[in-house]
Amino acid sequence: MNLDIGGQNNRNDQNGKWKIIDLHDGADFKVNLEEEGLPLDNNSVENIYSSHCIEHIEPDKLRNVFSEMYRVLKKGGAVRLVVPSFKKGVFYYFFMPWKLEKTMMPRINSNVPKTKMSRLSAWFYTETNKSNGTPGHKTAWDFELMKAFLSEAGFVDIKKMTLKKCSKEFKGKDNPNYEVFSLYVEAKK
Image (cartoon, rainbow, N blue to C red; front, side, top):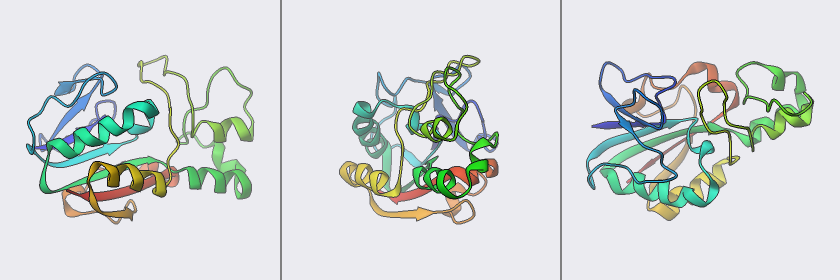
């Protein structure tokens, strides 16, 4: 089994190849990862993919989420995590501020003035999405932080990747509209 964590809103199960775990209705496994572990046996998952999900998890819950991913992944299995790239956000803030206004950037909070700084702050924090109940951003990510969490959980061969550079297991999973603001990381168990 391949597992897509947080993939229900932009469901891409590749005709049943991936099982979706999410807190939204319609997921193959409906789970709130801030409150419970993955409902799967140890070493039962071939690969794990997660795009724009873990930034929505409270920082004090992240170690448990990474440990759970490691627990359910089979030895030699791969994980691919895609999150908003803080480095890209800062670059845009200083050198291409108009890019922060693009619709595919992290969603700005409704209760703040629309400024360059409020758009950058969306990398760190956003409110709950009123239309679908998705929790907002709670953590900003760079490669160093991602690598630290993955290493602590036991993952090895941790690499920064790109939209077009991914392991064969993950071909076709990434949303190309997210490329402009995403960090891509892969690791092995």
